[in-house]
Length: 357
Ligand code: DAH
Image 1 (cartoon, rainbow, N blue to C red):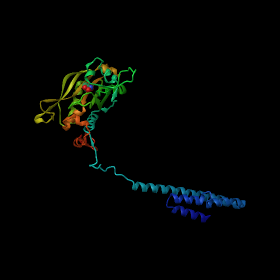
Image 2: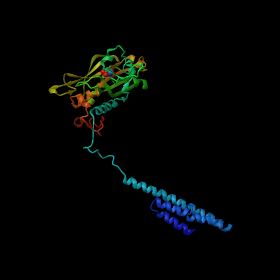
Image 3: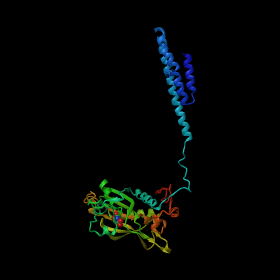
C-alpha cells in the first residue's frame, strides 16, 4: 500500500496537464483502477485481515482523490495565469489616426452644450421623435386653430383607415420634452433636451431634419432674471469668451408668457463673427416664462411653481462657432466635409478639459 501511495502521489505531482491527470485518475481510482481492484480483493480476505486493510485502502483512496483535485485546481490556475499573461490588450493605445472616423459637429455641439448645462445643474432629458399631437401642441397651449400649428410645417404620420384619433407627428420642436419631463418628474425640475426635430422646409438655412436644444427650469421663485443669467453663462462658456451680453426682444410663443427672443451681442467686422463685442445682435432662439396652462397640462400646479423655458438651434450654434457656411452640407455625408469639420472621437468635451478637446 505504501508503494501504491508513493507511486500515485508522485505521478500526480508530476502530471503536465489536465488530460494526463485524468488518465491517472482512471488508472488509480477508476472502475478498473489499481486501487479499486485492490478494494475488490477485500472480499477474499479473512475478517481480521479486512479490518486492517479496509480502512487503510479507504484512506489511500481518499488521499489520492484529494491529491487529484488539488493538482487539478493548480493546473487550472496555471492555465489561467498563462492566458492572462498572453491575451492582454492595451486599452490606452490611441486609435490609428488614418483609420479613425470623426465626430460630426452636431453631436459634438450637443456634448459641449450638455457639459455646460450639467455644470449649471441641468440634467439631460429625452423624448420620442414620433410624438403625439397632444404633447407637441395642445399641452403646449397651441390649440387647433392656432397659426403656430400651420407655421411649423409639421409632418403628420398616417393613421390606419377608420382610426380617427388625431395623427402623430414628427416632432417639429423639442418643446414636448418639457411636458414629458414634468409629467414624469414633477417639480422642481431642471432639464435640457437636445434632439432631432422635423419640418417641411429646405433652403440654405433650413433642412427638413434639424436639431434643437430645449431648456426648462421650474421651482418656486424662478424669474426672467435667472433665465438671462443662465443664457449669459451658457453663451460665454460655449463661445469661449469672457462675457456675452444677452438681449431679450419681446416676442410671442403660445407656451410662454412673457416671451422673449434671445439675442447675443456680436460684431461682423470684416465679415468675421466675433461674439461678446460690437454693435450687432445675433438671434439665438426663443424663451420665456412657462405659461400656466403648460404647467397645468403637465400636472404641475401653477399656483405653487413657475419657471423659464428656452429653445436654441443646435445646428446654427455649430455653424456660428465653427464657421460652417451651409446647413445642408451637415446632412450630405460627404467624407471630405466630415474630415474637414469633424472632431477626434476620443476628445470628449468637458468644461475642465476644454470644450474642443
Ligand atoms: N419651440 C420653439 C420653436 O421651435 C422654440 C422655443 C421658444 C422654445 C420659446 C421654448 C421657448 O422653450 O420658451 O420655434
